[in-house]
Length: 416
Image (cartoon, rainbow, N blue to C red; front, top):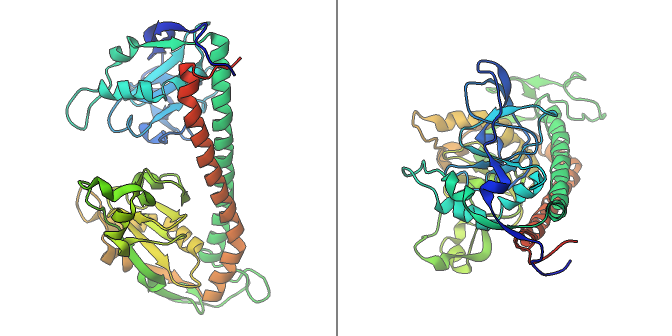
């Protein structure tokens, strides 16, 4: 790697990137659709799509970059690269995407994805937004007329390859974590939904004729009981936000968890904001320990994540601190399993869902014998340890990628 600017040329973005390239789909026919919800903030890969009737929207192929044009999706980091389609397949998506594509022999699709993830371009896009509050959109002409320094095509590909290798490893870890969590969830459902935990002989309890008794939540194994969330909790804590007007409340001392930190995360390894020692001490009774279970209960209701260290949350989250011998992993899966019930409790006829702590604590649950929970925890702990380790590695890889990104894209670091 060498430092200089030789062979880099000043170019207009609109001359090296196709904005919303023309594609044809037949209205009224079914095609794959990628909605805005399919994009995970600060994540390259798109994992999901749905089949819908095409009546309009953005159109794209594999390799294209989708950049959110609307607030707050762009600010939240919703920029991704399409790779989920078949070869030469065309799909459609939200009208709020700007579709970006390479120009043959001039630019590279992978390089374009990383280019539009630089703070330089993102900040200009955000500053260009116009429109009514809450519905502001990027002005494409501002981006098209933006002058950047572009490396030769081969160097573009090498830069993208370095950054892609980091994202590839992150995506591999994410796939591994999904498999691991699916394995653990299968065990949970077999034991605590189908009631086929190992009996004294190691055989499936219910399928081997284990005694079942009636309860208000249906038949349950003998020795189990119906209770409420409060019964399994040392404490349930509803979070609180320290005064934001006092900037000294915020720093780098303790994670301050909000709902965006919970999306697609088994463990919350990193939060967008951190509290200072002063901020924590203004509400010390709001601190929750490692392996507490966060449940979102306002607006976006029913998300569930585990804390990875001492943390605080905002008021949109109720956090369960389990009693001794109550497995955090059992509580985690139980809350995910009853997410629809949690959402129903939060409905209340208002447009914004809201489930307060008092009502949350009183949700009925089936409580197994403690010995079963201890055995489950012992069987499942190594799986969650691996998930956590992979998430920590991903955070380190993302940090390396984000450090290299501006330096590679500016030519401060050259690749040969």
